[in-house]
Length: 84
Image (cartoon, rainbow, N blue to C red; front, side, top):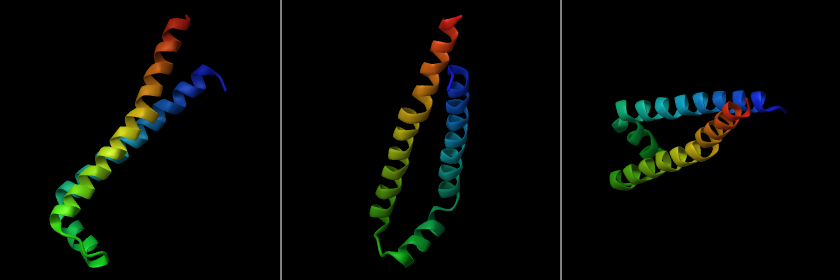
């Protein structure tokens, strides 16, 4: 696999994963009460615990997004620019 293909892979990985992250945050922000009611019917949980779990879930997702998508893409992009 050459540098150009790897850079393109990480670019699309970053765009798709970032889009999914934004979509998920907007989806939960628009109807947080409805999602809480759905999850509370499956697994009884307090509202404070639900908010904490949701906040932590998005935080962990964002951390992995940066570590495994954005930073490798930027590094490969820099390497590609310095090769010429």
